[in-house]
Image (cartoon, rainbow over all chains, first blue to last red; front, side, top):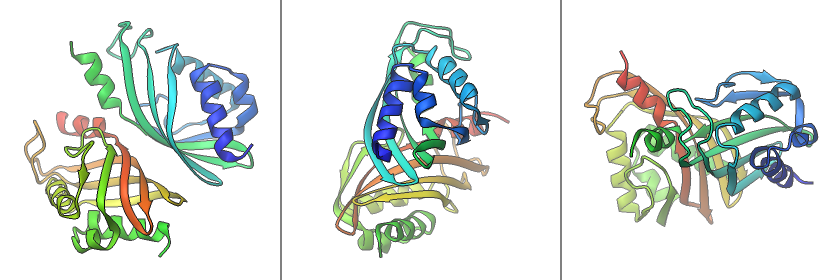
Length: 137
Length: 137
């Protein structure tokens, strides 16, 4: 697999389908969250087990979540991706208990790789739009 | 100049220094803002003159603003960049009149090029952090 395929496979299996084996297949032994404002793990470096815990906890907010990749830009060992996200709000968020509402968000992530494994990211998501969706009608 | 240099030169001259000639040098005749939630021009396609108007209006919020590029990923005709932004809040924002406060924000932008000119972008900025900086002490 080239870096584009690795990233596409990882996001589909891990983040859209919740397949923990995708972490074993594609994540390095140490994964650095360089920048991810609003993510509870922002600034931390995770083992694969800790990454799986983050994946399970993150997906609990919207267990039916799907990431769609809008664009992938690969210049190994870096791969950037623009994405949209959608899911149903079935888990609690700080200040916003589960509402059952459909939610949408967009963001971009710049991944670093070590060999053919993902070793970290720098991400910004449009979290303001989530607050607006939850705070209104 | 390669695409990395074009982007670096454009962001420094246009966005950090307010040099309108950088628009003539680096922006295509039509520039499409594919996705940029919170930007007043989100979804529009601009001529160079309209791009200059957007640049002038955007910079008025923090005329001393500086963009620092954290990482650039180039796979022509696409270039992605992770950035941080800082500036002094000297112009009004909706709901937040000029406060004189120092502000910081981060974001990522994925640019499209036509030949050696920038023809559009897909961007997400951490606007939630700006609201938090302005809404608190």
